[in-house]
Length: 228
Length: 300
Image (cartoon, rainbow over all chains, first blue to last red; front, side):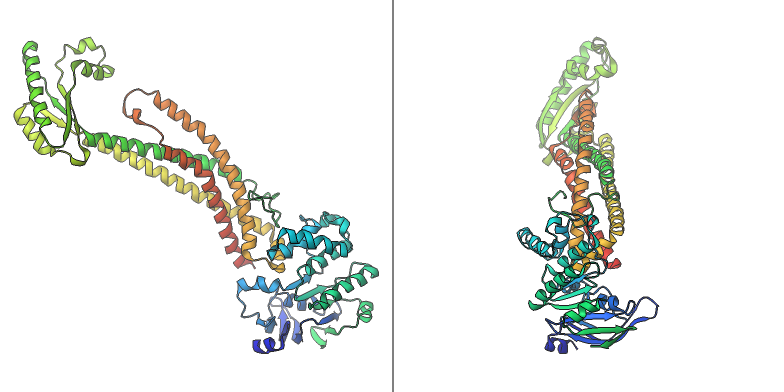
């Protein structure tokens, strides 16, 4: 299967994946999909349909209870523990609840992926302020997350996810806390990133946004992929 | 910020779980420094005793039981004969008879007024310096001396000093054991503090992992924090120790004569004590790093 993924160059390949937490019921059933580099998909579905669980699989936070998850041609069941960080650095994640580090400034939060990847402080000071300016947070560069509004936190989370130009961006309701104008602006940011080759999966409830941007949709219903 | 001037992605600076570390490491370094000082000083003292014993002999010639005017001449003849035998013995570097005045001075602390000593039939004493690397055959020398000089005995001090030397060595090793024990306790404390810190900051650690941080990236931050706290505590502990060691040295030097007159703290001891804060910091750093690696493998 790895060969197939490597041949197709798929960023993500799921084969008959099922997910359950502990001994609970299966949350995701028989998910099979393949995402090509540079693809852009909306992930839709009602609350509880399994969108966040599917994203967790792809950002390597959880392992499937059955089936195979192949990321960048690597079967995650065979990936050794010390190899996960390198895979995760290829993935940008916008968490639904942001997961910003409260003790760090906006700049330091956004700079985390760069610093973890070993970027120089010169690069950090060069790229991070530019991106923060782009997402409208230039005036909050030194602010701590606790002083920011929900929408501002969301933009910090988005900036952190995209700063490292990941091969795959997974965004869980990235426009859920911002007004329409900012949502459209952020969508343009995602599209710019997508043009640079980043595959994007954007989980959202915002049907207006899905309708406005003509990207294919992955729809989850009761843990099953309805359209791929 | 930490001792290395780097920044930390984990909020360890304001972490109450590790704030106590300097307060614990300071007394640990204090105890270690005192124990090390004792070990080095005793080792030096034992070495000094051992060297002295290896390099000297004392020949004692009992005072004859003849009248005083005859006894003096007999003693002088016996001493001259013993000196001649000694100086002709291979391995003997020097042999000098102690004068009566010198004997009186040596005995004065125990027997009091030196004038009274002149009336006592004191034995003649010969201080012999031997080559420690080629000591003379004591059995043969004793036979030769006792045949030539009735009442002569040789004391190489080994019998009574050897037990003292063994005691000194035991105490020195005990002190080294205390240092090792203190090191273990310090490591255990760092392990506890690090694990507690990891439990407190578990969410942050998970976020860092999700962003692609390696275990070692996280471990280095805990290690740097442990180093910073330990070096602070270590320096404080060392500062507390210095006056104690200095006071012991001063008090020892005020003791006249006896075995403790050779007591001194060798330069290597000062160096070892000075290195203790760095050793404590490196131990803490390594312990924290290993602990984080071990814990992350189980946690995540």
